[in-house]
Amino acid sequence: MTLKKQRIDVTDHITGKFVNGQMNLFLDNQPIGTMTNGEGGSKFELKNGFEANEDRFYQMADVPDKPDEKYVDCDDENGWC
Image 1: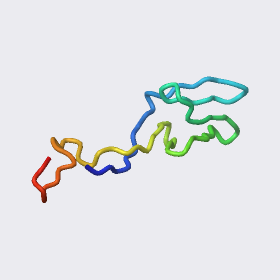
Image 2: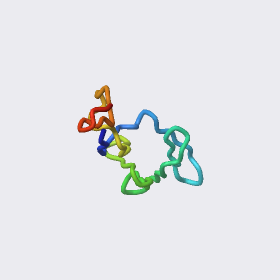
Image 3: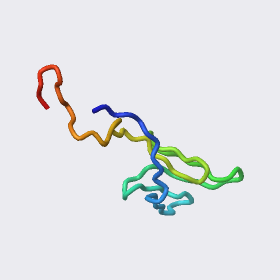
Image 4: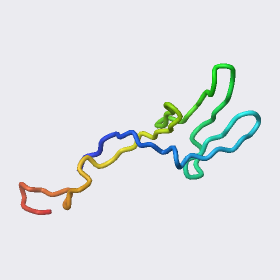
């Protein structure tokens, strides 16, 4: 089984808490960054692995390349699975 990077929409799981003029952002109670509002609109500072794009939040995650495989880590050369 190999893993590949995938961009996952986590917008529905993001919550915010307003503190000292900025919105602290959380994913499942874990802090992921901040949002501030200014003349140019909203500005996001997010932890590595997260991005904001067109009013949506995304997380880059490692996902199985072939998640439907029944057997993984088989050694076909030696005949075991």
